[in-house]
Picture 1: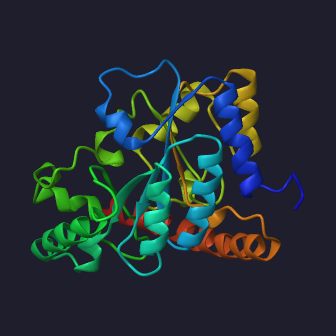
Picture 2: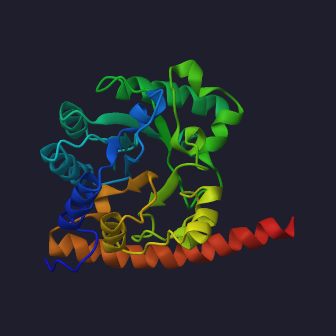
Picture 3: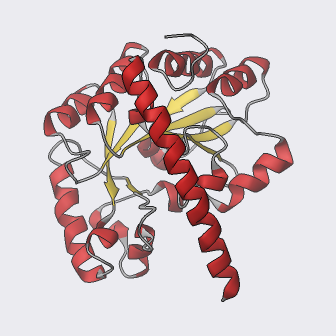
Length: 270
């Protein structure tokens, strides 16, 4: 594949090497939560495995070769949940977490959702001593899965952190490949934080391509504290898979853009 094509495994490798070369400590989310003090420069690497767990394994193999440790959040549904792959990724020293969507799966019944969460968490703890979890946003659902914690406390399950709830986003800049770009705030329904857009404007931290991230790391203008989220199903070296993902994401982005604007208008009408 051409070196100019974005969202390839080769491009992701270049990004990791740029973080290492720029002196960034690469942390799992568990490490971020547990450390009493943090390095001057760090990136928390988080991977949301929405589907195609085989691609998550390829990302983990790449990271393992570079001695990088990151966090992999798996959904309980079959599109994400592959026991052999989860075990293999854990064996490479990666953190495994639960990418929960219990409230939407249980159609808003928080009592059923709490039970479903506990059972799913026990399942993933068969692979790794899970202590962090992360909400899975379901754009087609009106339910925000984080609202489960308005009814119960995740600490009672031995959970120490949830990225959307326990990250100091006044200090840590959030970047995600949602929308198959790094500035997809306008097409993201739930994978965003309130401080994100304000920090873009204040610091001119606006990046569209992975090369933009790499160049900022090389010239020393990249933010010092970052939470970076990827969805491994987006990162392919095989042309057919890359083109399929490119086409699907363009369609999804158009639908999300309409949905986000509809929700904004609905909110403004109340």
